[in-house]
Image 1 (tube, protein in one colour):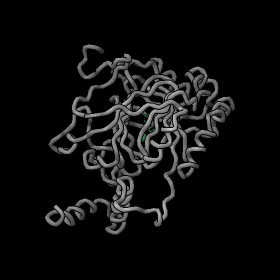
Image 2 (cartoon, rainbow, N blue to C red):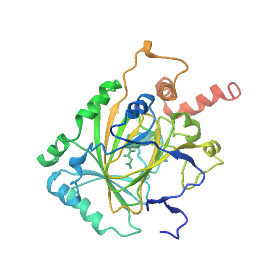
Image 3 (spheres, protein in one colour):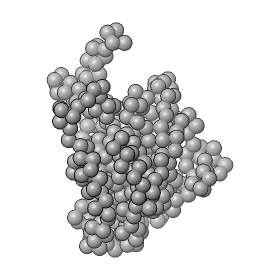
Length: 333
Ligand SMILES: C[C@@H](CC(=O)O)C(=O)C(=O)O
Ligand SMILES: [Zn+2]
C-alpha cells in the first residue's frame, strides 16, 4: 500500500486515499463533557465527540455475535464492482432510462454476508452491509440497542428542537469501501464502533462546487464530482472546494449537520469497519422563525422544492432542465 501513490498513511498509521486538490482543515475533536459541543450543534457545524460511550453496548457486535443474535431475516447488502458505493433511488430510473446503477442492492442472510466477507478476494465485487435496525433483531441485539446512551441523544434532540429519530443504519464495511460525497436532509450522529473511517465534510454553501445530480435523477443528493478523477472541464468550480477532514475510530461520534456534504471511506488499515448512525428529521421551522438572508440549508430545501414543483407543473421531469435553462440563460447569466 505504501508504494501506491493513490494512498497516503497519516501519522496515526491510518491509510486512505490521497486527494491533493481538496483543501481541508481538521474537524474539531472534543471530549464528551466539553460545553463547546452544544455550540457546534447549535451552529450546525461538524464536530467529533470523544469518549461519549454512546454505543458502547455495540462493541461486542463482531461478526460472530451478530451471526448469533441479529436474526435470520435477510439483510440489505450493497454489492459493487468498484470500491465505491453511491446510493441511488431505483424508483427514479424510469426518468433516466440510460442510467446504469453504480452498484446493486441485494438481500441476504447474515450467514451469507459473513461467508462472502470471509472468502472475499481482491478483484471480486465488494460488499457493504447497510441495514436499518428494526425490531426484527434478536433480543440480545435489542437489549444492546436499548443500552445506547439515549438520554444524551434525547437531550440534544430536545435542546435543538430536532424532529423525531427516523432510523439507525448499521454499517459493516470492508477496508477501502467508499461512500462518495453526498448530503442527507437529516441531522446525523454517526457512531464508529470498529475500525476507522476517514471523513471529508463540506458546508452546504459548496452546492455549486459539488454539482449535485438533478432532483429527479436516481442519484439525487449525490455529487457528480468524482474525487478520485475530478472532471474540471465539466465541473470547474470543484477546484474551489474547501472543507473539513478527520478520522473517526472506535468510540468516536461524528456530528454530521443536516445538508452538509460528506464523503466517508473505510481506511485500508482497518480489519472491518462497523458504524451505527442516528438520523433525525430536521427541526420544524415556522415562518416566524425565518431570517433573511436564508442559510444555505434553507436555500437547498427551496431549490429541491422548485425542481420537484417544476416536474409536477410541467408534467414531465425531463422538461425541468430545458425549462430552467430557458429561464436563466441570457437573463440571469
Ligand atoms: C452511510 C454513511 C456513509 C458510510 O458510513 O459509508 C452515511 O453517508 C451517513 O451516515 O449519512
Ligand atoms: Zn450520508
